[in-house]
Length: 263
Length: 308
Ligand SMILES: Nc1ncnc2c1ncn2[C@@H]1O[C@H](COP(=O)(O)OP(=O)(O)O)[C@@H](O)[C@H]1O
Ligand SMILES: [Mg+2]
Image (cartoon, chains in turn orange, cyan):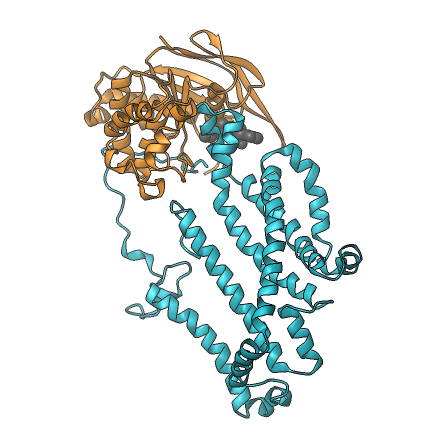
């Protein structure tokens, strides 16, 4: 039972241009084994929120709880996957995956017992000894996911992990992640600016709007699993997509009223 | 880091991206692209079979111009009579002979060794202090706040201006020469190394934290290994400065060394010796450079940088 909650989290950055309210009083709860997607336009505070949940940045106010206990700083109970610079280039694929276990001082054969099945599951068994530079973008992200899972975290926090992939690789990666999630049943918070991706993957979509970054709406995705490609063509998928798009566009229009008057 | 695509919606079942394969070449003005257009596109790779001859050709060009000046009457015709005077500009053949004689009969190898030793020691001491200090400056704000201003200031003071002081402090022998090299190399090298560690992406460190690393572990297991390639790169640059300051040091109060040989030769207008000395430095520089590249290739097989 691993739920992660954010309570009244605000983050203000002081910059040269003044104070930026990256996120403003965001409260959300992601239940155990739940796949939550956080969607919104660039700059609406998704990464900041995820980094606060990961404990990488301390919020200006508010708190994050894992299973009801407040978190202070990063920890192995929350694995993270980022969009870029994700792998340690000087370590081979296997060493990347075993990085967490090795930090704990786990002996080699025990580390192998963790990395071998993970690499197999990720379809990377024959690349165990390769360096990251030899991998494609999609493979790199699979290694990053395996590395996060090697620590057996309670929650996976993913920040646009497929954002740098081309459309076809990305589609494969999404299906792959769904399978992983169905097997491992971790709680996942998945940040994306891609609405299709959010609906395809999530049990719930949290919609955020920018300036200041706020949680606008919580939308349960009632499309049955396992979701196949056909799900994307269903009427329900289209409705959800429009609903989310409207929430975001509506906000944009309110922020930029002159844009609608023009043209 | 966030792609500025606002309306991008990737459909997992979507059509493949539009094919744009043949569109990479720069447009030729008319008809088929000319054979050389491929080589004139910025940053496009060229075959190795071409890059090696090109590199050799650049040496050929310099020696060719030199030979032209020395063996023909081009220079006086252009209004530079001094460049066609064997006393002022000896021919490539003369210099080659002189260089051979210097090694064979004048104990030049001893001077080369003396210079190399000074470079080695001066550079090693600079690197031994500069690399750890640079990494510390780049990694820890406290260290940076303390050291960076003073190093940045001293860096602007020309090492050659310290020579009189260094002679008073260290005498006129080896210590003074090594000290000149140290002052010339240590300060800028330290700042370059600091830049290397400071530019390690924060995400890489953050990932390690989320995987359970302590601050100490992040430093030793992520920041350091991530810095090494850049450190070696800047050592390669730094040893080039060492050569510059070595010659400066050897022009003052030295009884051995390539710089000393060049200075003595200039007293007697032995231009062939001067040029032979300069060429020797160039060759040694090329060798050190090759050594560093080889070390990079050997130590960092994971680097995805194309060889420079
Ligand atoms: N370290 C920082 N310093 C100053 N401003 C920041 C910092 N990180 C993020 N911001 C600002 O906070 C807002 C939200 O950023 P971010 O969380 O990265 O959004 P998203 O991930 O949704 O694109 C943006 O306006 C961004 O410029
Ligand atoms: Mg972001």
